[in-house]
Amino acid sequence: MEKRIGEAAGKVWKVLSTKKAVAQTEVAKASGLSADLANQAIGWLAREGKVTEEVSAGQVLLKLRS
Image 1: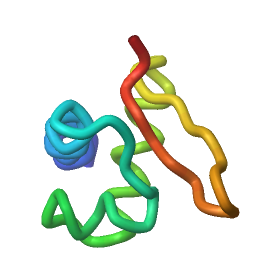
Image 2: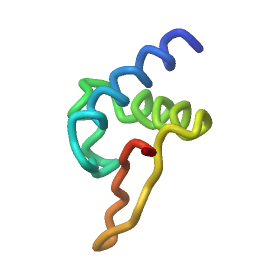
Image 3: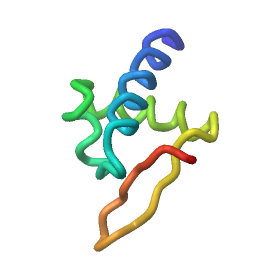
Image 4: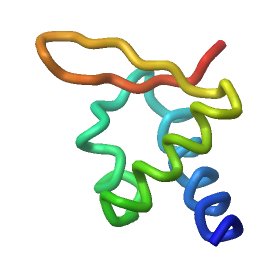
């Protein structure tokens, strides 16, 4: 399980590294992951302090922490 989520976190990180900010609802589609696995990967990255969020126009945007 940890390996699968860790690999998914890598895919999400790659998506976030190519864009300034990505809507949380678009991360799964952009990374080719299921919504559940994408959210687990986001949690992994958040726990490691690598991702941050901001709310804009009622939408949660994710970006890598600089």
